[in-house]
Image 1: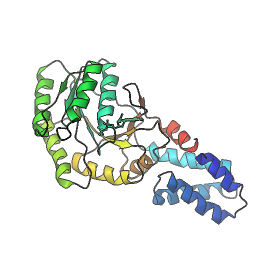
Image 2: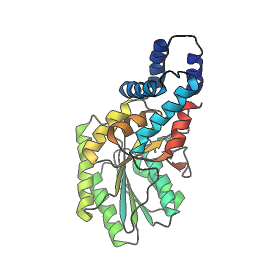
Image 3: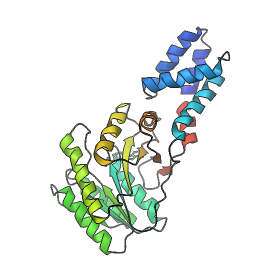
Image 4: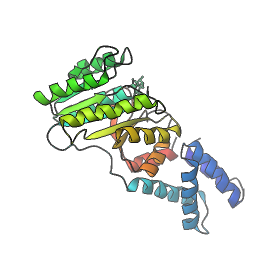
Length: 286
Ligand code: GDP
């Protein structure tokens, strides 16, 4: 049953207002919106709706409140300044980093950027290989390192090629890491330092890839990644499944980070500019 249908059924259930409100809270928390934010949103809708308490009004007002969460952040997409830019993608293992690196490479290559990939994931046996396969497919060169090589040296090498050759966009894939492993998180800071030695104005963006199928743990991930790598935005991957990615709302609400893109599948074409209004609409359908 979709969120919209559940809310409709609840309002039609003959329960009293307080019972409906408390059920609504549960329904929204199940959509991965944090309990605190749910209380805040419902509180506001309650106040606004006054005596009008029906499903349609409630849903309309809730959508308005959800959209307001996004209002303080930039709209989706990413327009890079002219010249050479560096993007770095970070996130936990399996969130979809390498795939989104490939998609972004394709996206910007189609917008006339000369793209270079850096596979700094020397931790996983397949880390570098996976991006190389994408590079072959998309016609984008990849600088990688052997397994176990220092990711810093791989990033350094990629920057050397990037600076001296005719590229204007370097996209760095990083090894997946859990936010609780401080040593690995600190490594991200080192990579940023290396980039800033080449150009203090870079990286242009550090993007956290958030898996839409993950629950509320993503807020804690985002906090830690920001602490260690100075995040500038988000990519919401795997939004094509049944998951609605509600947890990203908590990150946007708490941290004010913009969601740049949504990943909607496993090929390079499955990348969409994140659309606030559509995202909010789709939370209620399906
Ligand atoms: P990484 O470990 O963070 O680099 O994650 P990968 O890029 O290897 O992706 C992990 C898995 O998720 C792979 O099987 C990808 O094909 C899949 N994947 C990545 N992005 C998406 C997406 O937007 N939608 C779907 N359905 N699958 C995705």
